[in-house]
Length: 330
Image 1 (cartoon, rainbow, N blue to C red):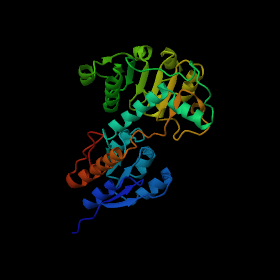
Image 2 (image 1 turned 180 degrees about the vertical axis):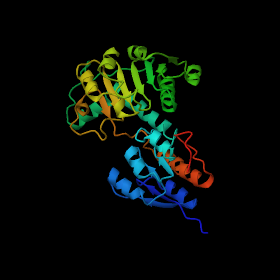
Image 3 (image 1 turned 120 degrees about the vertical axis):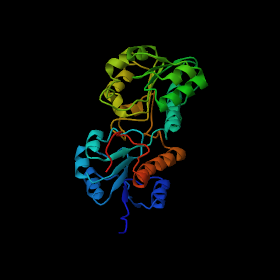
Image 4 (image 1 turned 120 degrees about the horizontal axis):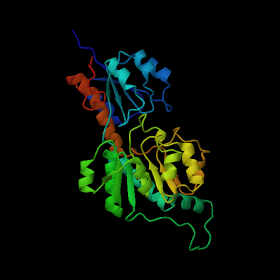
C-alpha cells in the first residue's frame, strides 16, 4: 500500500527554510499567503484539510480550536512562548505541541539592552525633537539622561534571554545583577555574581528592571500600580516578554506622575499598540512592535526548529522541542 504523504499548513509566510526542510522530508506544505492572519474560524476550517500545522504566537489555539481540530498530530509554534495554546486540552487529545526555545535569546536580549540605553539617554525623544525642529540653543540642564555604569539590573525571569541581558549589562556597564526566579540560577550566580532576591527587594533595589518571564496566571499583571510605587523614582522598566505582564494603565500613570523615570517596551497589550496611545508621546518611553526575534539569524533558526518538530514526529515519532511532555503521541 502506498504511504500517504502527510500535509502541513503554515499559518504565515515563514522563512523559506521551514518549507524547504519539510518538503525535503517528504511532507506536503501549504502556506497561508494573505497579509492579515486568518481568523480562528478560518484557521479551524483550513486545518481540517491538514495533518499538522506550523503556527505563530498570534494564532488562538484554545480549547475550541483543539476540539474542532482534534485530528491534528503536531502543532509546532514559531516562538518560544506558548501562552496562546491550551496545553492541557492538547495533551488530552494527544496533540504534540512543539516550540523553538533559545532560538531568539541573543536577538531579544539585544532589543532589551537597546531599549534600556535608548530610554536612559532619551535617544528617541531627541530624534523626534530634531524632526520637529525643536532643538534650540545649548541648555546645560536640559535633555539630561542617566548613566548606567555600576547601577543595579533587576531581572524578572532569569532564563536564557534574561541571562543574555544580564551578561550584556555586566560586561558593558559592570552593573550589579539581582534577579527574581522560582529557582536559583547557579550559572548566573557563579559567572555574574548575581543575587536571587524576593520580588519586593527586586523592586526596591533595581535601577533597571528587565522582564523576561513566561506569561502565566502568576505573572499576568504583576507589574501594577503597587509594584511601580515600590520602585525607585529614577528606575527604568523594560519589558520584552509579554505585554500582559505589566498593567498598561498603571504604567502610564506611574510615568505621568514620575513614580518611575522611564520605560522601554517591545511588547504591549494589545499588539500592535494603537497610534494614539499616550505612551508614544512620553519623553522617557521607547516602544517597539515586538521585534525581539526580528533578525535574519533568529527567524531562520526558529523556522528550522519549528520544521524539525514536525519532521521528527513523522520520521521517528519524536518531537525534539516538545512542550507538553508526557503526551501520548498518535
